[in-house]
Picture 1 (cartoon, helix red, strand yellow):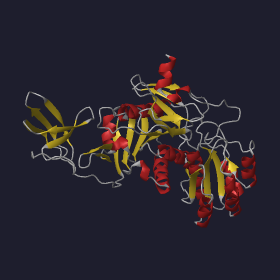
Picture 2 (tube, rainbow, N blue to C red; picture 1 turned 30 degrees about the vertical axis):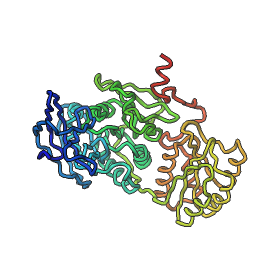
Picture 3 (tube, helix red, strand yellow; picture 1 turned 180 degrees about the vertical axis):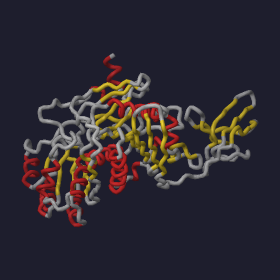
Picture 4 (cartoon, rainbow, N blue to C red; picture 1 turned 90 degrees about the horizontal axis):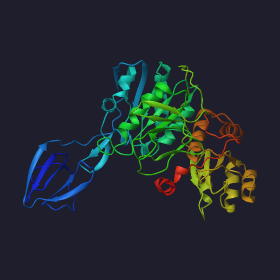
Length: 447
């Protein structure tokens, strides 16, 4: 076997003149000793036979395995603009590279690397505070992490930042966005969550374009809301700025994975032109106040259940017996579960558990007055949450139970259905079912 190690940049010259360059990936139990697995600059992997081949190591880049240490390292940059921006990195694909020991993606970049990657931050900032707060893939986030991130973001808003940018993994970004939206009260400036579907070292990465949109939002946004900045199309045409309590990741891998649900995105950002375009005039206005109140406690005794045909009704009994204080049900259609579960749900509400009903249909709203099952659920004490996204209802209920522990279930229910940060649509608003939801095929059919 040639003396190379995973992570090395190599050139393989085969008989006949074929030249292959790329980064050596680790071998597995199925890799022949006479082969190398190489990641090409295109992002694809290829197996190369070493028979009749000459291998040259161009750069030794063996990478030691990275850890997930929470360093909380803070770096301050001075720039040529007039904004004060805080950049808080929590982890995710946007701060990841390919781990050549395993071939997987791992947290590797620090926040300063990302800022150097997107010089727009320093161009528009007079003071840029960069914080390596944690390095967590977002599937590992917990309500305790929401609390910590809320307090960190609130700290910089209170110190006079014109906006805070939070780098975050995309899988649970909408959960954290909702958590920040509820926990940061009296928000005076925007908080922008940004992520990437593809790691920053890949040629097809969306990290750079998404990042470059963020300081433009801080500079131009007329709103003071928690928002998500992600690709609006599969190409680098513009970034959409979604309200943090009205957005969902709708695709596992596409760069335009995020869409606003039952709402219009707040804005578009054309990065190359550094142009901000407001799309939605229903927003919380920007006051630039630094008098932010931080209510950052979240209850871990809240669950979310998806209704399905034949669901075991004892699930509700189990949660009651385990001391859960809140349950969000993703009901079918207008908000239904099988009729046999009504008595278990009634037992839950009689025990003081707040049971909320959302719809799993993505678009539309709950209406428990239409069918018999819905009316029975209302009598059993279920609170319908209108067109609130189920995961937002889950986060809000967790936040309410964490910060208002002395409130009665009826008081928690009242707060749950009170519109705080535009997480609920008004009854007069037009139902929004975006035509671009169906993706490129619909656009091609209409062309």
